[in-house]
View 1 (spheres, helix red, strand yellow):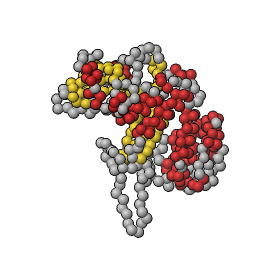
View 2 (cartoon, rainbow, N blue to C red):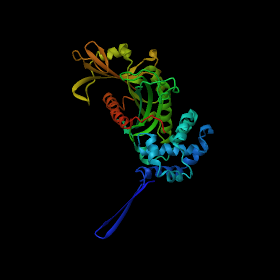
View 3 (spheres, rainbow, N blue to C red):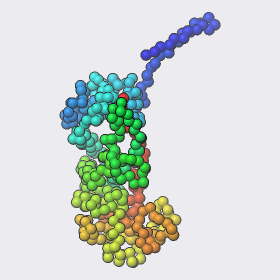
View 4 (cartoon, rainbow, N blue to C red):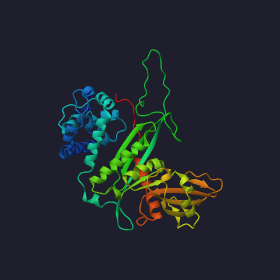
Length: 403
């Protein structure tokens, strides 16, 4: 700690001042302390100690709870990197660790080694611990949240989305006198399909949110393109446990999905678990089904105006029963079809061009007596709120070294 002294005399009065460093407590400290106290009072800390075990090979003298506390405080701080978090932690680390009854704070390099070596089983146990806390206690307000259909039945909406992050690699300048260079993103990213994104490698992340309270229920990230079917299975498991925790029948949950999941091998998972769903269909071969073609040959049920382009009216068809088991579906589908006259020389971003029309198809398992076709589309268009929530939270952090 440096100290500078200044002394001078003004009108017979001698003044002396000294300058010294006095590190201020960070603004996020109070919230981090509250989180630590909650973990103690709710029993989460004792559950963490007894249930989550990790090989001590890279932990040294610390326990899992030391690292979890630091990561919770890091999440609360909102700082862009762990390096900045550790700089802000210097004046308060003893106080923060004392909240959990710990004597020492792991160094940045120790935390880095722990994160590099922790196995998937321990992460799964920690995720289960967080889910258990999410489900208790059941708030009376949470039991009343949801939406009501035309019959008065209560439903709760969940959003699942798979996002792709593209990474652009810098050129590595290797020399024979230097050790082999390793990219910091080698574990998080892998070659894969990038779509319209520019980059050399990608990682895929599946997010789960409850639409009414904007709660994040899950976040699964893998290198490369990942396993969309496996991640959807995991997402369904999270939603099942959440519904059981709030005493909501799974048949009253609505799962909203984008076009990534609009094929038979994805919907089979939802049909097996009997979870109602709404998804944008990308299996346009269903338009060639004789029953679907017969319905499209008739007059549309109504005109529908999309909220983003209310000046353009679309023709709306509700086809309540389509037997598509030959295409791999387990149960009959309900299709909602929007038809729009194709603009000259216009290539649609979504939909299927057939003759002079553009078709948009949606698949759902919602009952027709509770949700009209317009209700289904309005509910699906509500995914825009989830996309906004995701964009607000989707701030990429620096993956650089901790020290």
